[in-house]
Length: 178
View 1 (cartoon, one colour):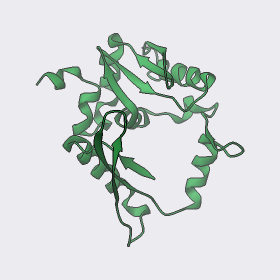
View 2 (cartoon, one colour; view 1 turned 90 degrees about the vertical axis):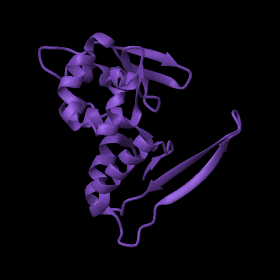
View 3 (cartoon, helix red, strand yellow; view 1 turned 45 degrees about the vertical axis):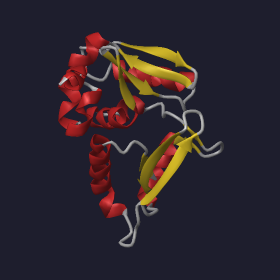
View 4 (tube, one colour; view 1 turned 180 degrees about the vertical axis):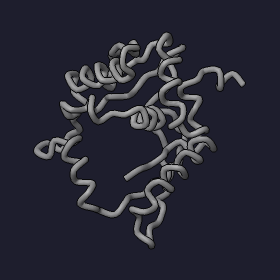
């Protein structure tokens, strides 16, 4: 299942992009699921839209890599350095990244500290001799990875071609200033 809770125009355009990618895996009769919900803390009403793919055996391989079936918890495989590509990092940022100061936070709340450390090491070493400078930040929801501002140019150079145009603001703070 994939969902988008922020329905601002640039997020909706990205949602349509993802929907297009998964069209071959949707039932001909599929329906988008729309819902609204009220945040009791802020009294603000939000909307969301989601869809679910058909069940295919080919997806089971990825589920077994990234889920502990015994506990139904997300995990990071020990081979993540062979699996995470610049394109994969771009999509991860588009879904779970946010600019912070001149750098970028990647939300990793659902993972153990050792899994987050493995992800951090993988990102640091993704682009060969030039390394991405990262640290782990504690948050009330759990650990998250922070990519330092001094590494953002290297990051942009390696993943921009995979970023949806409406999500470029997540890796370029100058877009927000326009």
